[in-house]
Amino acid sequence: MAIRILRLADVEARTCLSKSTIYGLIREGSFPESVPLSYRARGWLEHEIDAWIEGRVKARDAAPSGNESRAAAG
Image (cartoon, rainbow, N blue to C red):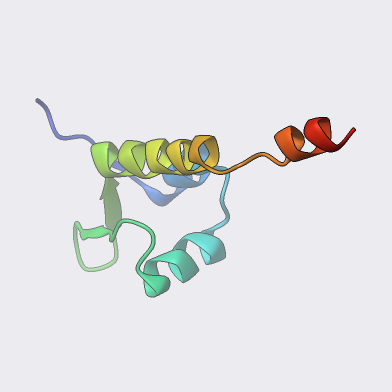
């Protein structure tokens, strides 16, 4: 498997999150850490970003949607 590194603009486009949100989630420990590439450049491992997105989808799918309780009450 080839390792692909994404720059911040790619991560923002892929996740639909802003730079400040990404760095805030990193501080909270709920987003993948960046990899230092040089003195001023950082990147993210593509497979870690993909896994984070998949985790968000799984969390959404596992959470009750609320529609079931409304349908039962109606």
